[in-house]
Image 1 (cartoon, rainbow, N blue to C red):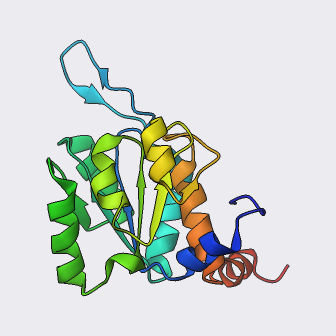
Image 2 (tube, helix red, strand yellow):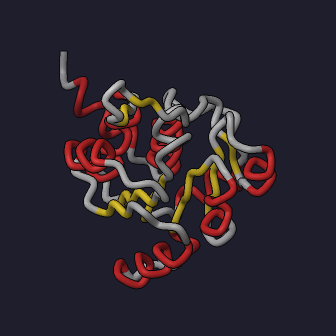
Length: 182
């Protein structure tokens, strides 16, 4: 759950979002790069973030991942979550973002982007809701509209998902459906 003291302006911005974009390293992961003895890369994803992404999709909010690195593990995790808009190896995230806007027929103001480091700024400066994870680079934090309480890889993405769903009035009906009648 996002904090209850979120400013009205942030809730208004979140209410307009139709596409939630996320970086990977430092946002969906803790930003550390782990390598096994055999040279294979390892990544850890927070399960709460995964459910948050599924909930966005189930409630009509598109999800996209734009990352500069290429990782089979990221492709595997996004496939498990049903995320079809996965763009890896993107040295200029803005070009990818512009192409995605055109393909989905959306405006930048209908998008949120969650990032943690300088390569994310080119998209963050364009979207309707720019979000920095708690442990983002100070420059990224200064350019963000909102900052999560949790760090990247530790549930920050779920905070973003919950904010979007709550701001659009979509969390309570879903909660009631999961609880059912007792």
